[in-house]
Image (cartoon, rainbow, N blue to C red):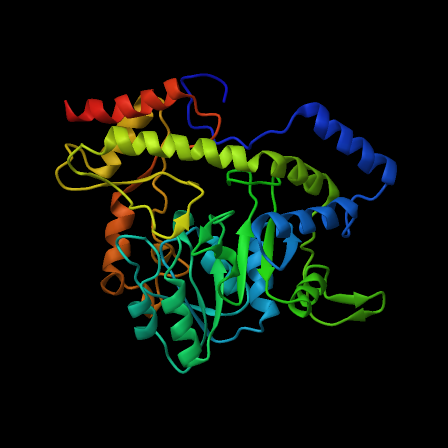
Length: 372
């Protein structure tokens, strides 16, 4: 963040420069830059312990992790997913030659509506790919019941869900696989990076083969894998970030609570309800701009930009409106009325650990000034 006037430059939680330099010197002395080096292995173990999961495989980014997760489970045919997400969710299906089938979302959570999932199942359906939108848990029990009934795999896009606890366990432990993003804008980051959380060592081993071109040993290639390895420099950065992530989430929680208190009484503005039985990570601060507020969502977005407050219409437009998807039968507007309404209302406010109280007050004042 260069100045107070530019208060939505989403920053990584930067470690101390001297600590990072020390680890770079270790990498230089070891002369191991990638291919599952010591820091890579150390970070996999540290993340699994921190997150409370059994097995975790690091990858170069969240998109490659989604692509690899689908390949690891040998998914074919149709996959039911959400139109309300970042494009990587659906793109990973196209990269695997799969057909996305869009189902509508729940208006309160912005996650896939289980009833709409079940209605979208056909004989060609093999998997469900829900997204824990903004880190809020999907209805994991209902989705698992549907998957068990119809013999489907469940791969969670958990890009927003780092550290989220749900009903006494990590949210990442639900489904067949969960996929994380460690992009610089996330709660926890390795600059670029991602991971797949899996339930057993055999699945992790297959993922490790797939992220290294499919090599099982020096002369054996067991599948058409990809180069998805996280390098040692990013792994070292991730180890330093892991020291600070709990403090970063605690600061996000403070900022989120202040927003909720300050904006609760404004007619036409609605904050998404906090999920029950869940410890959130406050990765985003979504606000719904509805009837009763003096400005529409896009007008408020522009008004804030004029005051150098950079909010985000996240996610807009819907994935189903993009050229490579809008021809699908499931992408038709009549099939997705809730997602379409939510996409027209949501505005994500600045939230990151370096946001000061004074800067946050500027955001609040800018919103409240629209009511006068």
